[in-house]
Length: 605
Ligand SMILES: Cc1cc2nc3c(=O)[nH]c(=O)nc-3n(C[C@H](O)[C@H](O)[C@H](O)COP(=O)(O)OP(=O)(O)OC[C@H]3O[C@@H](n4cnc5c(N)ncnc54)[C@H](O)[C@@H]3O)c2cc1C
Image (cartoon, rainbow, N blue to C red; front, side, top):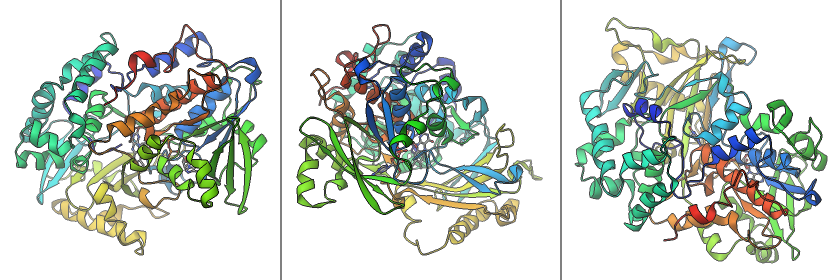
């Protein structure tokens, strides 16, 4: 998730409304599709009996790949998942800091996604299904009612407040954003929110409101330009607003991004009311990988009870981790030759599949084209149309870095003589930017310790830590510690004394992670059409016999990059496409995204 603005006061109001994140470009109700299948006791869609057992390649073992693989298996297909890294989860990456043998002194550090909005109901459906929601809590965002206190360090002055009891000038900024700017024509926030709220849900209204915004040319505006030109805010307000944030942290790192990216997140309620998964977010793809549908109460056709994605995959590739897909070439009969490099053995193997679901960052796909000389380049070119390749090449990503420290105890809840908490969730304009405090004591899982993100940064701020890669991790910890000690000088914080003794620190910078290109997709102004092409790619050939079996899914193609909800819903598009590809489709009693495309499809600009 990004630094996109979020609500503080509005969070409770939003909860009362029960908003579902119906992305306005394509407001298909994915959660209802999932729930209906559950209540009918069927897989999401069906393939012809002749297709039972057909192998489909799923590239990437992140949440999109794993949802696609799990649901494809339930339809009777044979998913084969390959993952280039050595772990399941992708950008759901739960690292255990501290001493894993000692529950009280070990804690999960979420290196990627860490907070999951309740309005993202497709993702929540899976968290419920695998039993993780039962072991979760409200995420302690800045200015959230669930956060003891927040400190904003701005222009070297510190403002302290508790819960969502915002200082007057912050509350005024929030009011100006939500009650004035976002209510203006054509944004009409309250109307859109009502159209996304269960009880008054209205997909046609969502589309009409959104298309008016597109028609008015708002794709051309950055977030910053929208604040200057449309909201008419003063420079002073924009600067303060950029720093304080309500919910997820300072917002100014999002200022260069297209305003539509911001608006989607606000409308859909993805910006607030977040859950922390005590089991660690990567447990979700992990459980979909290693557990059988019957253990979740799910039905499955063709395969015997107890069949798992892991079991089916390893029938084909005995070690599916550290397998890097390097090239995918469409054959004249529509099947795909896929070259997979085994990073452990250092050798390459080729396989043939009738369908491929590709979930990693899309610009990695672009690089494949050049990997093995001109002949392969020409063959790979055929995977996408020139316009789709252009969209791939221009996809824009946010950078992100995190530095975490496990602590001996949740010292921040100590109260000083001034009756303030000793340390707070901290938003600083200086090097640390966002500092978050996490306590897993209430977890029913194995890790019950605590710790803090010393620093969570995006875009240019994240790059500041990249410049001195030669410097060891402790030096970055020391930079953050020095700043935080100075912010909390009156409390004589002495942060270093609180750090754990065994393996307390971990740092990640997503720009330098092998197999990832930055953190997540976040488009710039003028890129709506690229996004529309990539999101719509799964529809290629759905009305012809034997449609295209190369299917894009995952965070990059979703309309809400940086939110796992988008990764999951694009995986569901891929599942529907697989059903159509193998001569089937959805049930008449549970229509899928392909069936509703005509009515809901994103508007072309
Ligand atoms: C720092 C950060 C913070 C975030 N915060 C939040 C948050 O708070 N809430 C939220 O909802 N979302 C958040 N997100 C977004 C969320 O993590 C993503 O939307 C989601 O995890 C993406 O899943 P995916 O399956 O689409 O992609 P990925 O998880 O990236 O999965 C793709 C997989 O493909 C693998 N791969 C790459 N190349 C190859 C290859 N050639 N061959 C085989 N495999 C390959 C990768 O190793 C990876 O495992 C955050 C992301 C980041 C990075």
